[in-house]
Length: 475
Ligand SMILES: Cc1cc2nc3c(=O)[nH]c(=O)nc-3n(C[C@H](O)[C@H](O)[C@H](O)COP(=O)(O)OP(=O)(O)OC[C@H]3O[C@@H](n4cnc5c(N)ncnc54)[C@H](O)[C@@H]3O)c2cc1C
Image (cartoon, rainbow, N blue to C red; front, side, top):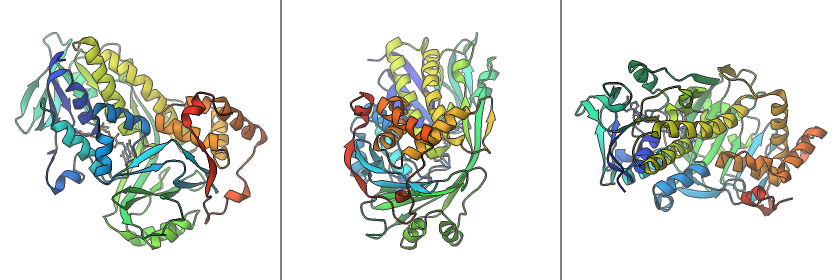
């Protein structure tokens, strides 16, 4: 049912495209504006582009985001598989070495789909741009247009392409972490949102490889050695579709991995598990090595503004951008788009939509923020601006949770479900909380049997269902 006229979405990456998909259900027409050409056909359509400089970095999709994207674009999960993306059990098919111990593996319901981001973005793009009421315009958004009394945003100023002024009932800012919209709003006489930061200064070097049969230990689809405060470097080797693996070397707290093959060889040798170097010796490199550095978590408190114009909504990284290790950004983009579509449908107009969407998104962003900041705060070098670090008690609890994942299937699955569904209530399940409390009280650390850095554990007998944890069916 059509409820609004013209909606303008600034930015045509994940947040912008998903917003367009959500709005296309109730807007007469949707115009997506991006500074890049957004190709649908031809070989460049599935490569990364200039406007998304992080496009070649390893990208994992959380289950919650996957669910929302499937709701916005029904059938996309199957399409991803047809494009060569691969599905795995997040807990059983991967091994992770953290702080000198392997995390346990157990069969679970936590199935994830692995891909290269350009393929994923293209799969979304071709679906969204094929919608009859969605069009794309190449141009640079440079400001907002306010109504005479400035109570509403009635369009956007766009440079390049057809250029000039685009008028519409609703403008969505999905221009990413570097969004200029706080300044655009100031130009209309409104306050800028407060910014919060937790800086951890991290860097990636990412490339793809082909691994021969048997390069990884039997039964494993991927392997990771995680950074810790004692050793701030890590590597994840994970499948990314079509038989390839992404290799993401990374460093935290201002320690950056090298970005050339020779130096990376030495880097792998220096990791706490020699298994990575052994696997990488067998790998055939299939792409360039692409480095990327970022300061860390950034949150703009759009929900806290005392006043805002009607008809203007901010989504995606323009609201919250996280340390990418936690893989939350695309899911936040999907959650924002879903809220936006629902709010417009419910209101039947744009009145009140901005307030409602920013308020609801703020609640979800806080959950994701707490998860990311909780993990980054293990580094004493983390810098906090306009936000507090977690308490000493929370940090001790976090250490016990981490240690318990070496031997307790319930805790391992609850931790992954919390991350994949951005829902800490898995960790509140009695079967999980009581176990963690025992580890904390006894000061227990991982057993010797999981400390051999060359030998990841086999999959443990049994199956843990994350939904059963929530329902209290696991004791
Ligand atoms: C190294 C790295 C790894 C990451 N890994 C993951 C991961 O594993 N999982 C995950 O979920 N997320 C990950 N993310 C985050 C993820 O990339 C973003 O959350 C996701 O792309 C959604 O961002 P967005 O659409 O809001 O902005 P972006 O992806 O930054 O896109 C912004 C778009 O706006 C356009 N644009 C910008 N300014 C203008 C303008 N003025 N006018 C017109 N167009 C403009 C750009 O061209 C671009 O298309 C990672 C990020 C980084 C940096």
